[in-house]
Amino acid sequence: LSAFILTGTFAQLPTTSHAASTDDTPVWSREDAQNFTLTDENTAPNIDSFTDVAPDYWIWDTWPLRNRDGSIAKINGYYVQFALTASKEYTWGGRHDHAEIRYFYSKNGKDWEMGTVPYDTDKALGYRQWAGSAMMEKDGTIHLFYTAAGRKDEGPTFEQRLAKTTFEMDYDNKEGFQVTNNGDHQILAEADGEYYETQEQKTGSIIYSFRDPWFFQHPETGEEYIIFEGNTGGDEKTLEEKHIGDVDEDVPAGAEDYNGNVGIAKAENEDLTEFELMPPLLEANGVNQQLERPHVVQKGDDYYLFTISHQFTFAPGLEGPDGLYGFHANSLFGDYEPMNDTGLVIANPAEDPFQAYSWAVLPHGQVISFVNEYHDENGNFQQGGSFAPTLKLKLKGDTSEIKREMGEGEIHG
Ligand code: FRU
Image 1 (tube, rainbow, N blue to C red):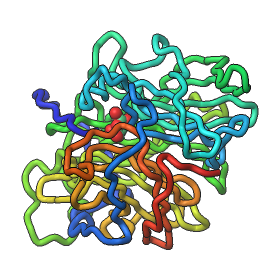
Image 2 (cartoon, rainbow, N blue to C red):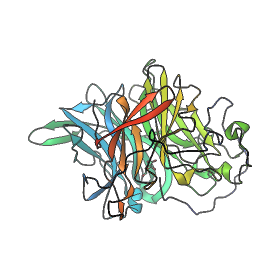
Image 3 (cartoon, rainbow, N blue to C red):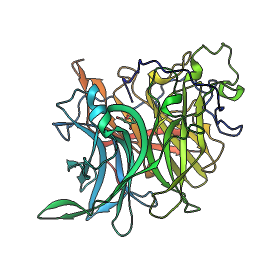
Image 4 (tube, protein in one colour):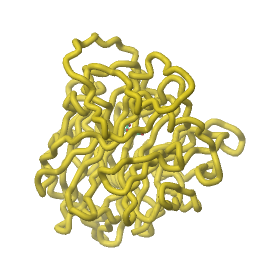
C-alpha cells in the first residue's frame, strides 16, 4: 500500500509475549537485502502509454479467476479477472479508501471489458474491500477471497481481516455476464497477536498488515491454504542474529519496527470457511514492513514464494526498489532462500521506478501488474490505473529472467 504513512501515536503495551519467530522460520535478512541492481534479467521495459480499460475507474491489484488446482479458469469461453477499482471521482491517492472489487472479462485473454461489483456492497465486510484471490469449483461456485479493511460504520480505518464470499457467474449471448446465487460474507481469519501482529501491537509509522488472502491447493497433498501478508506478532520487537546476518554496519534504531512476514493458514473444511493460522512461511523482521500479495508458484520440485514490496517500506539503512521479490525452496514449508541472491525478480526501469506495481506470477510464468505512475514520451508525469503489459518470466532453479513483454493484462490458460 503506497502513500499510507500513519502519524498517530500508539500506546506502549506491557511486555506480555515475545515475537513468535521460531528458530526455523526462514528469513529475508539484512545481509540478503543489500546491493539490489537493475539488470536485463530483472528490469521491465518502459511504459509510455497505456489503454485505459475503464476510463471512469481506477484499476489496481488484479487477479484472475482460477480453478481449484490453480490453473486459469474460463466461463463459457471467457477469461475473468477481478481487480480493485474505485471511481475516478476519488483521487488517485484516495482510491484505497473506496476500493471495491469488480470483474473484467475477455475472450482472447487480452482485450478486457469491465463488468460489475459481483457482490452486494452493503453486505460485504469491511468499510472497503482490498486484495484477494478467486477460485471456481467444478460445480461453478466461485469463492472470492478478499481483505475486509476497516469496519462499515467506522470509516476508512486500518483494521484488516481475511474474508470470503461466494457466487456463480454465467455468460449468455443476450444478457452478457450474470452473477447469481450470492452467498454470505464470512471472516476467515484475524490476527492472533502471536504469529501475526494485531493493530494494537504495531509500532512505527507504516500501516500494519493482515491482508491479501491468496488461495493455494498443495499440488502433492491436496491440502488447501490461504497465504497472506502479515507482520510478526508479539509485543516485544528484538532482532535476532538470523534477521541481520553478516553485515558491516550497525543496525539503525527503529529497524525493528519493520517486521513484515508471509502468513499461511490451513483450510479445515471443504467449504473453505474455517482456517487455522500457522507460523509464517517467511519473515523480514528488521528488513521490510510490507510483504504484499504473497503467493506460491510450484514447478516440479521448485517452490517459488513471490511477494511485492515498496522502496519506502524497507527498514532504515536498507535501500531497495518497488518490485517483485521471490524466494525459492524445495517444498511449501521449505527453507526459502532469496532468488537471484537478493530476492529481486522484477523492477521498474530506472527512469520510472514506480511505473508498475502489484505483480502476480501465474502459471506458465505470466506476470500481471497495473500501471502506477510514470512519465509519458513528452516527459509528463502520468497516473495510471489500468492493466500493465504482462511480462513472461522464466524460472530456473533459484534464478529468474524476464523473457518478453505481452499484451496489457494478457493471460492464457
Ligand atoms: C497492494 C496493496 C494491497 C492491498 C491494496 C489496498 O497494492 O497495498 O496489499 O490489498 O493494495 O489498496
